[in-house]
Length: 180
Image 1: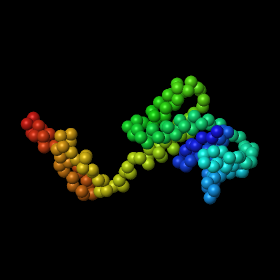
Image 2: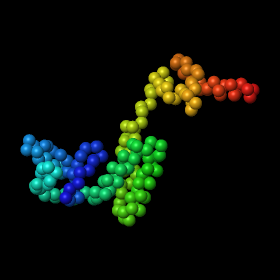
Image 3: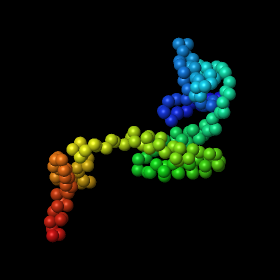
Image 4: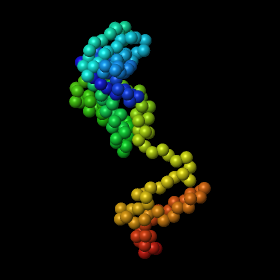
């Protein structure tokens, strides 16, 4: 049986007999032709209504060394990196790997952090907002101009070339004035 997985580029692929297949085309009769991701070989699968109809060609290349469970763990790590922005990426990787090894009771080789580092940081950067090019372009959302008591905190903002921001609430200024 085959499994549908997500590749590093985010597209769908089929994992079958330790090989990955990408969608070549969908036919008018509802079948899909999936070809080997190694473009040098013409092995393909024909799938209709989520059922494998037949395979064509042979794999003369070395099959993927990565098992389906490892592909799923890497996909899970990538999803956690995008969802949990407060944890460092290295910590997410270490926790996921140790959880996988503890649950599966295996020492199967998971890609090293350095092999996934660029992909994980690229995934995280798609979720984080872009940094402004200059201080003039810096927009402060209204939620950051108020404190927990819903008082204005931003009391000074000169939008000049040398931008200066002043944060203080009226309550804080009164407390400061009483302590002087």
